[in-house]
Length: 452
Image (cartoon, rainbow, N blue to C red):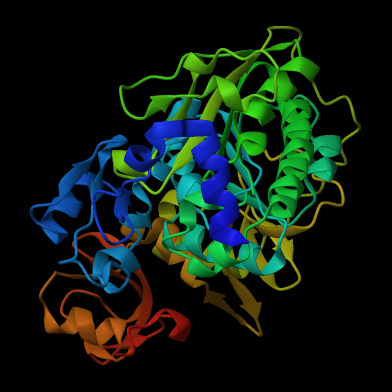
């Protein structure tokens, strides 16, 4: 079925344009890297790490990888969360939301975290980012990626989108739906997806996308912006999905999309419903990406929702062991609100509203654990705030100590004094170590090390 079903449908829709639109410029799947704007000078760091990279035509801040960068995931800057390896056309979506610091932003289908990281960078640590993933294993991957990127203000959920809508009606300034889709734009990267492709899968994904869009509409505040995207070409999941949504929701209108990349939508893909296809966008394989569809919608202005539910005020717990640790190593954040979950000390996002019984994967930053008579810091704390630590060991690219550190080895200290220290590469966090007798004991998580 797979490829035959897909090719027949697209030939019928595109006619003699089929061959040209599905002509890939390169033989191998397109790859790119997206800078993490939470890391200072991340864009220039990309050029330092990978000289000669071309700019991504879909996002001027991003770069295109070539065959010369075989393992960007093992580069020290990747460990330090300076960038995210991302399919080039996927980098076009998050900027459409026009996120500004201080906003309340929801990413309903967030794993593995590339677009979420872009939203976090736009927020600059201010405001609230709620990132949700329905599949538990993918939610864990999302958590790990946002931890690596040093995101301090994210609430990560593992939830059904309808439950999120019930908890946060009309709450968010911006909502992203990067919908689970039939993945036709991923055929080159995932050949098994091609083999399993059929109309039933497209129907199933379109139905799921509809449910998620309904939740997104409920979560969005009046005057807010919703962006919907897929990495598929299927009409029911793209133009047809948006046309049907607008038919159900007259309070929403399509917005113009900026930039001159990609192509307008296709009017023969709307399922017979009216849609201004000039205001939605497709990226075809011939344009340099694997494929994407996107639409930007605005909810009509109206009265803002305010949470009238009674809020239980919890007494602030003075966690003395954490307070002593923060005063010594992180004085800039020692006054942050804390939350105790068992023996885990969390630094939750500022202004986090009641979350009811939603399943939380991570709330803010995991600072560390309270053990018998001592505080054991967490890797996440140093990835989020390592550059603010009072005791630091700064390594540089090309230095043998750096690669020994990433292999999990103990290294000599040249700057850090006895006690816990942040280890950095060119000022970018690489986790934590503990100094004693001029040596730094390695606490970089084993699962993250470069063992080869």
